[in-house]
Image 1 (cartoon, rainbow, N blue to C red):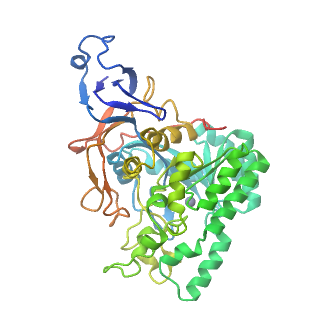
Image 2 (cartoon, rainbow, N blue to C red; image 1 turned 90 degrees about the horizontal axis):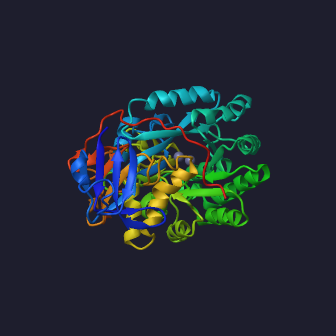
Image 3 (tube, rainbow, N blue to C red; image 1 turned 135 degrees about the vertical axis):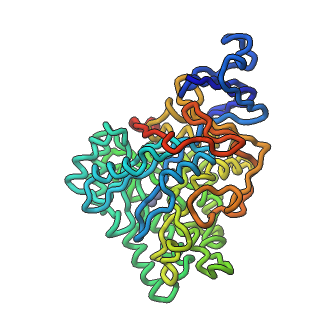
Length: 478
Ligand SMILES: [Zn+2]
Ligand SMILES: [Zn+2]
């Protein structure tokens, strides 16, 4: 088996940093050594197959993006990244594991949906991958099958309080599924927005001629997110199940989570880079020469971008510091403007929901370190260590220690990354939601289970390098 030594760098974990050399043997990290240690010989560098010089750079555990939607069917089309293109883009950006959502829609069997997802991903991924299960139809069959997912390495499932007629679960269905979670240790994940209310507001807006992307953000009011978040917390409380709320964007929803956590409840929340940087006014309300006031469609996602005037973005950064929110995922769900987003010209309800970010999460969050929003350690915790703990991967992933997978990123704080189409853009989309963002750092080298897959020359891995990873139960409970 090939051996690799990463030498001269600063190893950063969720709890600290130290000058150290990292030795990988085959697919696993086998030693973290004090520089100059002669324990393994006087010239270790000469005895390994590959030496990576990380002098002046950070050596961090590979990113784990716990919320992606490759090839997701939505609104009559499919998310434009396949497992092949999406995981390759992730690799470029220093993410070495994704957790994607296998889909069961109403009337379909859960295990059929899961089998389909295995088929889509197998042999196509550049990096390791795991699955959550979307349960779009909570019924007798799916409730009976849920506990068996644990043996399949799928220990979390997602329900939707939005999208009536597509993925929606009512309170009775949510209660029953949470009871199963409480009994088994499965972690329920929630898209917490009051869908029936949003659909009425959206219909009224369109009838009033307010059809541009901006009104997507108006229809999906923060009250609908706060209310649903509260309801989900109460249902979890009633059943004793833990709860993980996805893509939190409203500061009022954060307050609901914080109150429940302060009372000792096992509730958790993620946010996404778009809710930290982008806004209703600047993006959903944007116009361009090419698209006019349809420009904002690039940023139509749910939950929506929120008003900067109301201060949600600053509050999300704060919640990441105070651990009222525990981690950052992307909700990567890319659609092209031409042929996909443009389905919604004249009616924002028909714009496929989602933006693409899987490639840029580590960089965008590192910029938060540069600007003083986060510490270096918190950056690692939010993007790798907590995702691993939350979803039962810790020890194998999310940490640089002997026995862990050799998933490592060498990050250069003196490098620079310009994001945009034609610059840094490997996602299968005809635009970037992050066009023009400049990052004061750079992903230099990406190692996946001991193999370099990105280096100075670019992507050097192969389709199919990534393996399916079975997850254990959550390791994050209070
Ligand atoms: Zn969602
Ligand atoms: Zn999602």
